[in-house]
Amino acid sequence: MSEGTSVPFGPQHPVLPEPIQLRISLEDENVVQALPALGYVHRGIEKAGELNDFQQNVFLVERVCGICSSIHALAYCLAVEAVLGLEAPKRASYLRVVWMELHRIHSHLLYLGLLAEAFGFESLFMEFWRVRERVMDLLEMTAGNRVIISVCTIGGVRRDIDAEQARAIREELPKLRDEARRLVDSLLSDYTVRQRTVGKGTIPAALALELGAVGPTLRGSGVAQDMRMAGYAAYGELEFRPVTFPDGDTYSRTAVRAEEVFQSIDLVLAALDNLPEGDLKVGFKGRPEGAALARVEAPRGELIYMVVGNGTKNLERMRVRVPTYANIPALLTVLPGCEFADVPVVTLSIDPCISCTER
Amino acid sequence: MSVLGEVSGIARIEDAPLESLLDALRAYRQRQARFITASCLDRGDRFEILYLFDEDLRTVAVRTLLPKGAKLPSATGVYLCAFLVENELQDLFGIEVEGLHIDYSGKFLVTDTFDAPPLLKQTACELQLPKENPS
Amino acid sequence: MARMLRSVLHNAFSKPATRPFPEAPRAAFEKARGLVTFDCTDCRFCGACALKCPTGAIRVVREERKILFEPFKCIVCGACLEACRFGSVQMGPERRKPVYEKPVEVYTKPEADKPATPQDRNE
Image 1: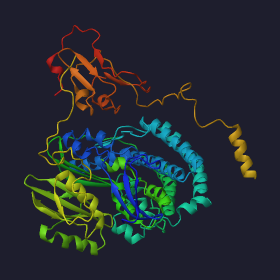
Image 2 (image 1 turned 90 degrees about the horizontal axis):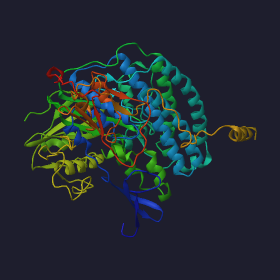
Image 3 (image 1 turned 120 degrees about the horizontal axis):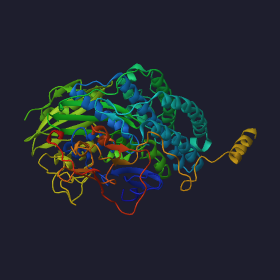
Image 4 (image 1 turned 180 degrees about the horizontal axis):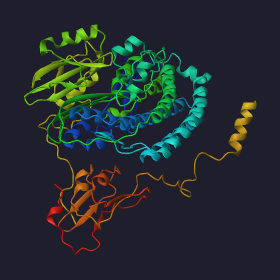
């Protein structure tokens, strides 16, 4: 340690727009140790969740994350619905699937673009974001906002997708799939990309499970675990198989996300085809008393909300466990042994969302 | 104060006294349950701490009750990935965790300017909402 | 070579994916969430919108029969829209333009001589 060099990676680094510091100890060009420093932008949302009205918390938890915001709202709503003994109507469950999967598509396209940018493939970055922009347009058309779409509410959804909008989504997504396929093929088959990602930051399956990795990080190690298999919302009624790749390296994790884009497109189309008629939400009376835990699959992995109500309009406790939090130990374990030049790409390969982590 | 009863979404809650907490966690480790997180509740004179595990998409939990002022044995010897959440317990609840492998000694998330652990119930926090008409 | 030629021709003759933003902004979607405005013609000043607002952007002064709205605290969630039983809150698709100062908008009833009746209170 005393012989080596210590390099601060972050909190301001071109590859990550968000503040996390990795204190990296180097020997020559090789990383021997990495330690994280968090808390640059900690916002205390868990405490705020205890002080706010439980219905207003829906808007609060949407602001935990700037990419997968509505999935946070869904997890919170599922937890509160479980406490209140509500069940969202069928149509609401299917609409939730549509919006959550649109969110997953845009989040994964964002990641693929950022990864391309991380090793200097700027034109591919712009191509990915051009395609992503069309998903954002679909979100804005149906929900009224681009990212923080505020569609979930306790007991159902707040917006409807009418026939006209469903037709627009059905027309747009197959076109989008063709374009994304072309881009993904050029990303995954490119010689330079393979050189930069294959075999870098390898997490074996046993280690990933032991370190509690979640989401694409776990599935990229060949473990078929996806919370959507548990069948919350309408996922239980839609055909769905988790995407896995066996190698556990940066390439595998990227390939998992790329394939999930297409899987999500299929899920959106399937949900729109099977969209039942019915109410958008159920009313409720009373205040939450009791506790519930909800686990959903966010783009970065498993997201957990635990809600403890005490019969007043304020919650006793709102616990948020975000996917990046579970993936940081895996990242710290694979960084030693990497070359320093690979640190940005390997760090990005868990798709860290610091805004989630600093909730 | 009472402890949590049935929690919807958690298949089973196993109670473990503080002394045998690490043994209980070790049993889960041997069954290769995936550690999810630990969650803490301020229950007046004690803390209720839940260690959550995943067993084939089911959530199971180990609960321990920690009197305020007592030290919590660290789970990092069993599950290394618990170091993040235990540092968070130190910061946000003021719990002293003993034997933490990577210890930020209460400076993980909060800074020196915090005078009280923010997630304790007694830590007052006023919502800054406008009450009266200023005009 | 033929594939490249196709890309070259496509890029040379197709329109850019971006828009010339300040000159030609995109038309807002019909259902987009934008400007929140109040129409106090039917408003009973019950305060339901202020109660539901998660950021405290709305204040209702019953005595002076006034609604004070701080648009730059508003997160355009639409909770006030759903809370209002009298249709006094409107949301248009256009986005708010950037400004130099953050004003407080004051809305009053157009004919401010009719007294509010007690049963209008929303408890």
